[in-house]
Length: 566
Ligand SMILES: *[C@@H]1O[C@H](CO)[C@@H](O)[C@H](O)[C@H]1NC(C)=O
Ligand SMILES: *[C@@H]1O[C@H](CO)[C@@H](O)[C@H](O)[C@H]1NC(C)=O
Ligand SMILES: *[C@@H]1O[C@H](CO)[C@@H](O)[C@H](O)[C@H]1NC(C)=O
Ligand SMILES: *[C@@H]1O[C@H](CO)[C@@H](O)[C@H](O)[C@H]1NC(C)=O
Ligand SMILES: *[C@@H]1O[C@H](CO)[C@@H](O)[C@H](O)[C@H]1NC(C)=O
Ligand SMILES: CC(=O)N[C@H]1CO[C@H](CO)[C@@H](O)[C@@H]1O
Image (tube, rainbow, N blue to C red; front, side):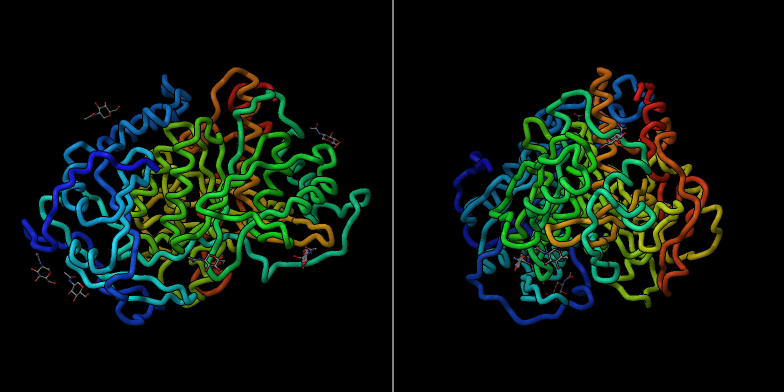
């Protein structure tokens, strides 16, 4: 991280404010389940990020449309990260205003995002209380995680026009939540030798996925730049995530003997460790076994971030920042983690979504599981909710969100996360589809969701598969399985595009909702769970629906839609 070297070293006498401070963001109360433990020590160190106004984010949105709509003359002509940085870097006035205010009292002032629009402050509670005219408390969340937060914060009126938000003063986001479910659905089975593998009706393994979606065994382009990235996050209270290399070798040997010996690259952020002393984290095992094991020879990289702040917003930003600083970023990136959208403040969700917009501009297909709790995220909220619960980052319009299906027969999965964003309005490429769906349900659920929000998910794929270690194979479920499988499909499509001399797909949604629909098979039966148990969520139907999106991968169909021979 580069030091911001433009800091004027002017001394500001402490907390004698030159101008009035104005409340910049506030909440009326901490979320339910969060308790006040007391006051933090004034000398306690905390880290905050300050996000400055980006110079031309509306211009960048136009560029993303231009490179992502198949009908556009500049389709596929992605920007470099350096070009993107020109759109998001703060104005020099913003940088100097922020440096003037924070510079002298802050121990370290570092650039956090590559374009310098988000900086990180390390300071004491006392300093922060003075600078933001607020009072911090120590809070404890339902999972026992301790957080130093306040209910509001202020900025000098002269700084307000330069700063979007300061985080996480009023944000109580938990760590990224994995979308794998193994408690309810786990079935350990005696090891099957591959000579007599059970049929796909009983156990879904890579050959089944290949058969369901018509996926080729291998890549043909020989490209070394068409790669898949896989997100991993260590989670407070849930257990470390890691990928056991022996288990992957065993899995491939058992289920993909044609690519046995393939492996993955490893990137460790913030001191994360990929431990090898046990069977690995459930999420990491699924995500790597169902990318390396599905995407033929597409090089795969596991990007594991340590939960150093226990905060999903920072975790997702770490990953975005890593992607934006790669000389050759992965063409496809899959994330099987999701948090309730309402956990994020609107300002941090918007900031993260603008990060995904930047990745769309450089041509990365960002794929996210849509969550595993049906319409209401019921496995966390319980069945007594009165409103449906959209998940984020799935609800950001610049990502492709993946719901879950059963293959036999193709049916939308009851726990497939989906619905409508409360933060992001429906994008142009989706409006006709969501309104067509909503016209079929009339007033049902009126008041429980935002009918003008971005619809989730975009697509779906198989939600239950088998992972393996050297002693057993285990059934696991969730959009955690669907997301890496969909990402692998896209990586194999990209391989054929590269072989045909065409650009990779980049931001997928404008294609998928228009000329790319032939590359997906509509799933018309099934439904998700709602607020009162498994029968009252969204219904799947013809066309887009908030359970299975536009449908599941159809590789030959996609080849045809893209005008290339498979
Ligand atoms: C700080 O906030 C208090 C209310 O909590 C307000 O009375 C005071 O004027 C504020 N200080 C400044 C400098 O704006
Ligand atoms: C913002 O970006 C758009 C799209 O590239 C461009 O047309 C416009 O001139 C830019 N505006 C500014 C103020 O730089
Ligand atoms: C800010 O938070 C404090 C509690 O820390 C509260 O007393 C005050 O009323 C809040 N002010 C606003 C404007 O929300
Ligand atoms: C994939 O490989 C298997 C053997 O491992 C073979 O039976 C099958 O025909 C191959 N499929 C394609 C599409 O090449
Ligand atoms: C293999 O996986 C099973 C099921 O998750 C687990 O109980 C077992 O401990 C694992 N075995 C090894 C050797 O890692
Ligand atoms: C800061 C923080 O939340 N750290 C946690 C990261 O995840 C591990 C594994 O669950 C926990 O032990 C740490 O407390």
